[in-house]
Length: 213
Ligand code: Z5A
Image (tube, rainbow, N blue to C red; front, side, top):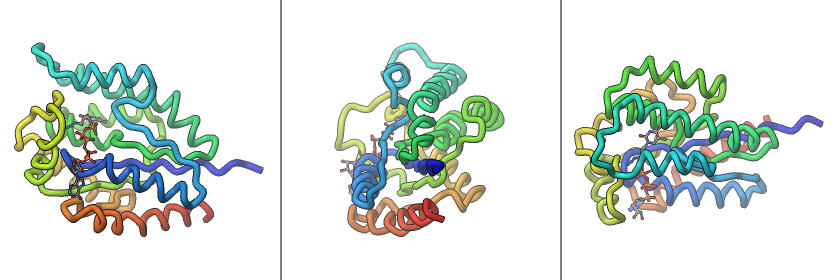
């Protein structure tokens, strides 16, 4: 009997969108349905990739050039895919990942202005044919997200950016939805927690049905 490949679900959004809170909800829902799921994040997810994450997120005096940031994101991703994502999917485990390559298109492409073609080249080099089966975009007005995020910890290197940067990030995410509407599920993340969760449920039903279909 051949083992069914696991599903690859990613969760995206701008600051304070509620990714962490909702990922825990999705994990619990999937496990309650008897689905084995591993939760991970980007940049990060393996010891080496987590070290790269620290390099990327630490505020520093030295200006990080766009290419160094881009290549470090994909270096972490290459390790994450090889050591965690592909082996999990191959054994039939679902992978639920806090950010993936859409974040590179949104933050490095939209936010920093990196040429999208360069990102596409690295995407195919590092990922081959691997793409998420479904991406939840938790969408909300930038100002509201920043307000939520400000109530938390010290800002990291990305969180120190100005509102205009995050407006470009949000616009890039929405452009990606337009280009690939069948992969994305756009969730109104400005609503209260319970209302956000209710929007996620039908998509989990659909993904579970696909598993058997
Ligand atoms: N990055 C990149 O540039 N390129 C890439 O390719 C990748 C990443 C992969 C780290 O990501 C940074 O890396 C990120 C992009 C960049 N930069 N930033 N900024 P991260 O995902 O670890 O960092 P983050 O975006 O700051 O995520 P976060 O801090 O974990 O936020 P969150 O998970 O979206 O939100 P949360 O912690 O679940 O919620 C935030 C607060 O809002 C919290 O107090 C909640 O209780 C509250 N909350 C959440 N939902 C609600 C609702 N519905 N109502 C009211 N309050 C709420």
